Image (tube, rainbow, N blue to C red; front, side):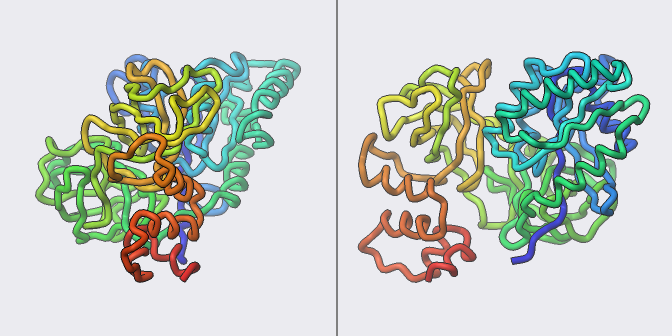
Amino acid sequence: MSASRFFILGSAGHVDHGKTTLIKALTGIETDRLPEEKARGLSIDLGFAHLALPSKRVAGIVDVPGHERFLKNMLAGVGGFDMVLLVIDAVESVMPQTREHMEILEQLKIPAGVVALTKADLVDEDFLQMALEEVTEYLSGTFLAGAPVVPVSGVTGFGTRKLLKAIDTVLDSVPPRVLEGPAYLPVDRVFTKAGFGTVITGSLWSGRLRKGDRVTLMPEAVETKVRGLQVYGEPAEEALAGQRVAVNLGGVDVASVHRGQVLGSPDALVSTDRVDAQVELRKDSRALRNRSRVRLYFGTCEALGKVIVLDADEVEPGATGLVQFVLDAPVTARRGDRFVLRNSTAEHTIGGGMFLEMRPQAHRRKDEKTLEILRQQEAGTALSLVKAVLMQAPLKPRRPADVAESLKNPLDVVTVW
């Protein structure tokens, strides 16, 4: 199986802790592109850059807003991270959006990260040491326990070389993205360019795109063609998983394209308004009651719907459960993709989870056969996934190729048959 050695590095952290300033110091690129952002000195939407590392690798960067009012935009960028650059102000230390961003990152199972302790030029050595100890203590109970914490200044450049080295070292341990299989690119930006037409951008989660490829915009199933590609702002004949990509689409009106769609290989993806999932609630959330209204955030998409609790009367705070989401409108995602769960008014993050089955049938609650199938899908091994497929239609003869098609991952099945 060939794998991509390209990565997406994303920022996270409280408002005004210096994320955008630091990224400009590292890359020379200003990620605040909107006039309102420049006027207010505040990131509102996603920003993008690319970073040349000491190892000669290039990492695409997604810079997310830190203000709580723009958390929706942050959620549209964070799902594609291979690793996070958590930015914490040495003067203010851990703040509310630091904690909220960390909770979201943990729900999405971001594999690794580095912490930048910014504005180190504004404090003396004793204060800096105290800030380092406080941040290290906060991280001890999180997925970033033991991650490098590097004092830096985006203004003076202090510590930036050490930070680049730390990012490079951590990337060595990040799982590479798979190049085999269908292309999968959640759309995060749409615009028109004179002489070219409709252009989308996104992080390529898997597969590859080539100039001239036939592709489909989901969930609307709009067929189109790749007229041109740019990778890190340069024309390219091919884009690989883990790269930031701009795609010029042929024959598609810009009004029909929007953030939340997915660009993928033809016939590889499905649209659905019903999804089976495993959910895990935060300990401080309320219980998730059957038929509650909720919002899901996955890829670059936001979806509103109701939850059917399948294995209990409700999912208790801090507990996991098996559910089915019935959504107000069709969406596109994949089995195994992670999501963040918020209440219907989007005021609170209540948990997260993983999609188990796309386009399932409606289930009877507390049905033992259904729950066993979902538990097999939850286990996620090749054997358990095959077992789940067979359990759904045990009397129908199944060839290995049939099962592989159901799983949409032939490589998993080969190890079993």
